[in-house]
Structures are given as C-alpha cells and as structure tokens.
Image 1: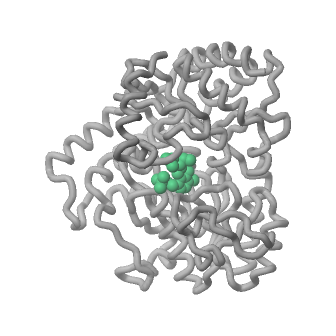
Image 2 (image 1 turned 135 degrees about the vertical axis):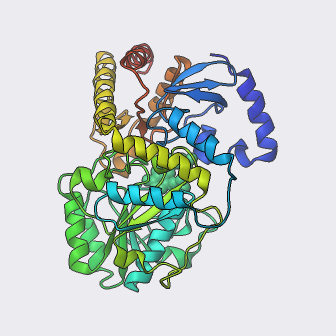
Length: 429
Ligand code: KE4
C-alpha cells in the first residue's frame, strides 16, 4: 500500500487544523503512523486518496450500518437539499422521524433531536438533573459519552467520592458532581450511591460498552442498575449512541429487556449526517423548554437534510428487520475466522462480541472493564492494526474502540479479512 498523497494531505491539514484532524481518534496517535485520507466510499469499501481499496470495519464509527453511500439515503438527501438546507423553523419530516423512532424504541414517548451524541448525552444529564432536582451523576470508568465537561472525568483520589478532571479546561467545580464507578461491578455502584445518598440525579452508561473495545454487560448488571435506580430515586440513562438501532430495532433496551428512563442516540439515527437525540417518557421530556424549565436548543437541530438521511435509514431498518440478524451472523462468522487465525499462531487474545459490535484484545485474561482492557498487550494491537491495513483491511485505530459491521459486507470480504489476519498473525509474536 502506498500513502504518499495521504501523507502530503496530512502535512497540509496540520497547518490549519489542530493535529490535522477534526476528531482526535482519526490521527492514529494510539496506533502510530499517519492517518489515511479517504476519497470516497461505497458499500463496505473505502477508497483512499492513494487509490487503495480498504474493507471498512469502522463505518464512520457506526452510522453506516447498511454500507456507505446507501442509495435511498443519498437520494433522500439530494432531493431534500434542492428544497433548501436549513430554515430554523419546524418541518414535517422532524415529526415523521420522531414518530418512527418512538414506534421502534421501547419506553419512550417523545424525542428531541440535536447534532451529535455529545449534545444528546449532555442534554440528557441536564434534563435528569432538572427533573430530579439533584446534582451528582454516576458514570463508569472507560465509558465515553462525548466531550461535554461532566464526562471528561477520571476516578478521583477517594474511590467513592467525586472525580477529577481528565482534561485541562474542565473545572473542579464540574468534576465534583461526577462520580466514577467500575463497569460490571454492582457492589461498587452501591458503595458510590450509599456514600452520596439522596444526591444522585442519574446513572449514565453504555449498555454495551464500545469505548474500551466492546465490553458486554455482565449477567444481571443492567438489571441490578435498574433496581438500584428504583430504590434510590435515580434516573437510569442508556447511552445508545452506538447500540441504538444497531443491536436491535429497539436497541439495547429491547435486546436486554431492561428499561432505561432516558435514552440517547447518535450515529445510525442520522444515517451518516450530524444527528443526535435523547428520548424518554412524556413526564420527563415535558420538562424541556419550551414547555418545561430545562433549557436546551440548537440552530441546526432537526436539520432537514439530516432528518432526511436519518428517516431513510430508520425506515429501511424498520421495514427490513432481517438486516439485524444478517449483520449479527456476519459478525459471528468474522469472530470464528479471527479466532481460528489467531489461535493457529498461538497468540494470546480474547474477542468480545455483542451483535454486530466486536473487538480483539491481545490478552489471555477476559476483558470485562477498563482495567482489563488497559492491561492487554496494546503494542501487539498496534502491529495487528498496521498489518491488517497493509493487507487492505481498515479496523478501528485503537485497542479501545469497537469494530462496526455493515450489511454491505459480504462473506467473501470476511474470508479476505480472515486471510489477512492469518498473514499478520504470523508476525505478531
Ligand atoms: P459524538 O459527539 O462523537 O457524535 O458522540 C459521542 C459519543 C457518545 N456516546 C458514545 C457511546 C459514543 O461512542 C460516542 C462517540 N463515539 C466515538 C467512537 N468511540 C466517536 C469517534 C470520534 O470521537 O471521532
């Protein structure tokens, strides 16, 4: 693979964009080397600026569940654009996609559209605080809910007291209201709740973690959180930015049969255009301006082009629900192939998978939380990443990310991926 043009473009980009990218993970800092600049994409394939064709296992970090440049989505956006791109006024299509989302997702009556997953999670927490009149929140180490200040927090000195900023610019004043707990550790959550009795507005989590690699909820973990929230008058927020409209039409709530109080969305709901959303039963959502006291707003919220892309995407997923089983089966086939290829070389690894979310960790121990993900051999992951890239396979450029499968991927693509893995595995040890 040659990357001359990507490298030249990266040099240019760094002169006018911090780090040459508009989102840090794209810069390959975690895996080393220089990012690949993409020219275009179609179906399961990326075509970079040097003419390399890559099998895409990121799919824009989740949105392209039906593959890139999916015809109905593209046509919907093109048609909408000819009628104007933004009005700052209500449009019928916002109601159409809202009604469809509400019909697909359990336990929500109303939904508010925003422009990113960050905005959705930030607004959901503000709504939970406004509704419960309590200020503290619990999040989990290793879970990512976007870059809003309340979420850029690491475990503080006291295990069960407030957190500490994990980015300059986040104040102690903000950090003191964010409590950190350990994913898949209900006892730890109980400790944190008991140490902050009556002060916690919400618990926010990824029902399947995707930002430590893919980490499934342990048996009973989600149900246990639901119980603790019921017993302590705490709202449970499922951050379904990754899992929503991917793990099932109704997302993780449907898959695991556990009801959240507020659900956030991103990625798939926008069909590849900038859309986030948060949703809940009416008694909670009606706390939002203009009918309630909790303020939240956005110039481009409900943008007609983004709504057209999202509506085309959700309509297809709703009407062809066999897609979910299809991508799950393809992910299982990939899992088996990778497992055979890596085992044959005696590499210490573990693969986590839920539905069409999957990740490879070079660890002989189970990866069940942030600590176990961090303790894996991530140097080996970096070699694995670059080896696959050289073979035309593009996976997430970090051991702390999930791969996302799209339904445009064929079994032949997966066989080619496994063949590439076999080749790379020989040089891993
Ligand atoms: P955005 O603001 O990036 O649309 O969504 C934030 C977000 C919220 N919740 C979850 C569970 C998420 O995974 C994300 C964003 N995911 C990352 C990938 N790990 C986006 C990639 C990036 O930051 O460029």
